[in-house]
Length: 134
Image (cartoon, rainbow, N blue to C red):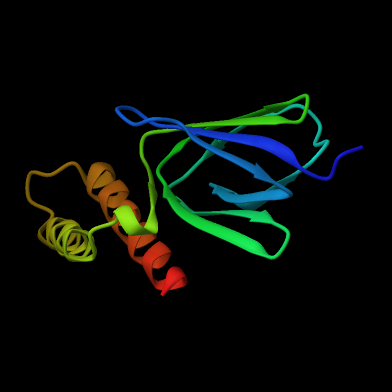
């Protein structure tokens, strides 16, 4: 049995990101989850987070928004609302998004609270991804 598996991350408007990895670590509403080669078939819902792909001593950290992970026959497909490698994340824009979301949540006037919370979670995940890679 191989200790690696094929990983494809798909998000709207971008070319798929293809990796070969020993592990993929991401987050669900219940906490972190790790997928390894020969994992049992599964379909898992994810939240906005820093996703890590490990292959030997190499680690790739990227921002992934909420999505679905499907793994079967040593192939993992991760369909998410957005996926960005750290070099594609605009730090200034991420901090501005965080400030906007926090302001909306503090004012609580005529806003969709859940939407503001999701925006804040995405901004924080992007910032965390940048911080991990620097």
